[in-house]
Length: 261
Image (cartoon, rainbow, N blue to C red; front, top):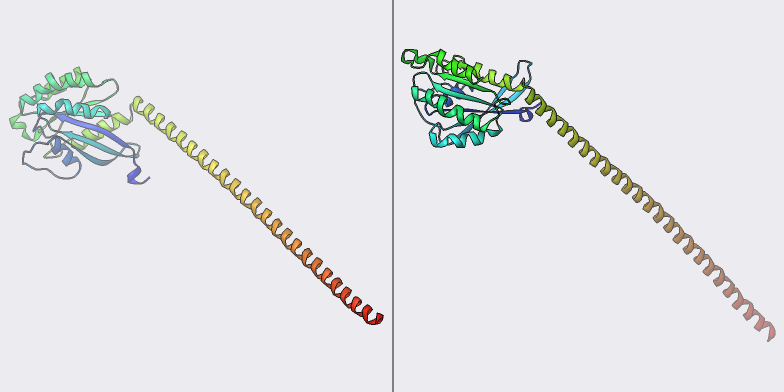
């Protein structure tokens, strides 16, 4: 299967501004890490090839959104078609953690059926452990209470970065709902193929009919041509015979007149 035809799985990464969401994606995509702190404006996405534990290739489409509060509802509306969410806070930023607990989790519950979509909670920036405000146990407690997956990461060092994307990806494709959706899509594709094949076969029958019709028409034309040639030949024979008789008649008459003189 070519890269263009790989199945696509969409996930969203959300959280407060400057928690390192884009840095996590960049690190995972092999784009390195920058110490410059910049905020995402609006919505962006990344397409990254990924392999399952069964060595099956997919494309992971990761939506990245601005963390500012006025973008929260926009982000969740865009993420409605996503199969999984990564929710990020910074371990050295209490506000980002409070937003997770008080805002993001409520909005996620209002928007999604969490029995059908996995959420992975990430405490980022563990390379700044000396500045840590949020203990690992606090993050894990919130994750457990809401049945979220949980990791702590560092976009700078790469610690657990690959793990969070691989974990959310594997959780999605191993979920029974995902398997049902995939089977439905495969059935629809099969129906479409059958329909196309039927259409093609009809076209083939039409072509065969056209060929037969063309063949019949050709045979008819040949017969008509033969009949025309035959009639023309008979007509010429008739003219020749009559011309011969007429000529003979004139000669006989002339001879007769000479005799009678």
